[in-house]
Image 1 (tube, rainbow, N blue to C red):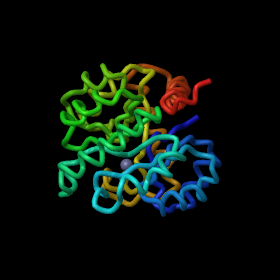
Image 2: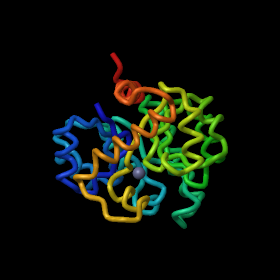
Image 3: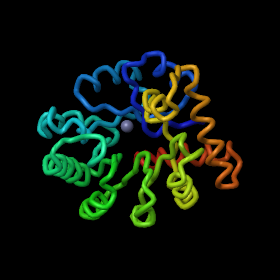
Amino acid sequence: MLIDAHCHLASNQELAQLQIKQQIKAIINCQTPEEWQINSKLTMHMQPLSFGIHPWDVNKLKFEEIVPYLKLADAVGEIGLDSVWTKNDMALQTKTFRKQLAWAAKKQKPVILHTKGCEKEILAIIRQYPNNYFVHWYDCRKYQKDYIDLDCYFSICLDIIDNPAVIKLAQSVPLDHLLIETDGLNSVEWLLNKPVSVTDYSGILKQTLTALAHLRHIDSNKLATILGKNLIHFLGQAK
Ligand SMILES: [Zn+2]
């Protein structure tokens, strides 16, 4: 079984159908109420959905208006701070992030983190809200051990192939806290700097899985089973 621990569908029906057909368990990210409605339909309620105010969207949504969606979501996210790809006010980003973290910790909903450029700050903040965290696409060389010591899960992207920070991370995270993700086809296009189609999707996940298996000296089928279990554990759905 393949997993995609963090994926933006970007309204791509073909991708949603392929995931279901190939039994790829994917946490589908939703960052607006509109996207929630679209993704609920596209996934036919067969995939876990995450919902949260992305640091890029803190000017567009208020915490109070997203609470109904947080209640329905399987995970809160992706949420976090970003000092690299957005100029959004850091005080507003932090306030929005903390409100969502506090809510998630109280309701014991797992959280998916976006940490770009704010790895140190987020580490200090999440210590105040003990919860089940998964750090998405972490590509910072620093603080890796600190996050690992907090029992965070990490999802590894296709850049495991040539990003030294990601390789270092993929070597150090305990096997039972590893996940893989695509972040959606748009992110893969950005990463590879070339067009990517739905037909490439499972190949991208398999390539990521194979690279990770190679790095950890483990059979890729065995690793796929472990990753599937990890995703279920992260979501708190283990029975
Ligand atoms: Zn994302």
